[in-house]
Length: 385
Image (cartoon, rainbow, N blue to C red; front, side, top):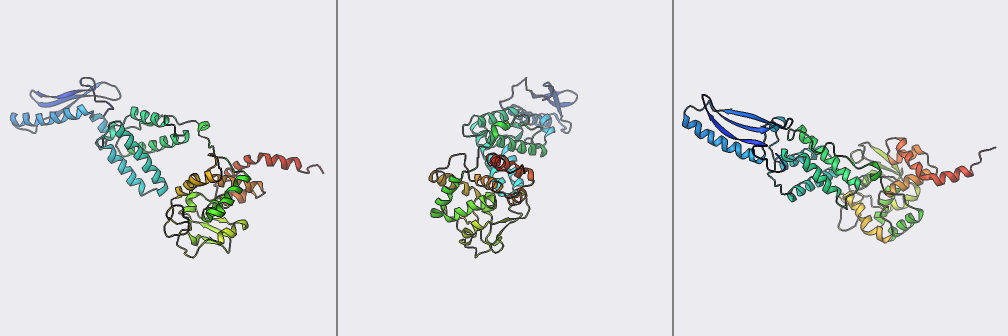
């Protein structure tokens, strides 16, 4: 299938009947690799009388010519046996299969990307009957150009779209919907353009944030402290249950099923954070510490909150109320916590364990943010005895 209707006598030659010693139907289609027309034949030997042959031939010819006019190509079909399933069916099948393999947060992103693709195709005039094989290289280039030209889409988001569509269409190749990935070879945005703009928070910004939350939302203050002091990720915080907290040992158990790396880990609760943890109602071990309620009520409950709600409260309220600039995001708390721990002398190996990093090298990256403090410490060091 093509983006535009195929041209007769260039992309194909319609089917006709040959009535010689052997009756057969013949037609031509363009071979993708050589760009030359290749002939196909369908013999009518199983029909006995001329009348039967003529009736059958007319039915077959009409059907073949209808398909050829729409862009059908048996050469492509041989390379991808499911190529004439609809693209929408292929997309729905992809989501159904991945939904049994992946976590809900990832699936939420996958569904969003697929929804965008369907909406974009509809805007281009393609309906739900569009064949999977009709999604060409040109369409891949067009959709990525439209994403790139959207002022709201950052270079990092552009790369996320591209990475997903490569995964999606590689899956379609494996399942026989298409013969090649149309997104292959489209270049990602450079690392220089996709570097994070997030920065660590100043002491004054931290003070303003914590003081404000003490008076307006103590539950969200604990959420912030879990990220800043216990270096927990938003998803881990959202799935944390009351029974995961051991106030006597000052430990939080991050279960493997909620951790990013699927491994169990424990986070130490600093002494300074304990007064706020003791205010929590942890009487229902199976409840989530931060339940799903109306508005921005983060009290415990039997149903978990969506981790996106944590970031949304930050952007909808705290950014304005505490005067926080755009480059400060909720996850800046973890960056700041790691940096401040290292700056206060906590050994890198301990910070690595608290942050649940896979290697010391990952934790050591944050040492670069301590340049000013490091320089001051070196200047004041008594090195010459």
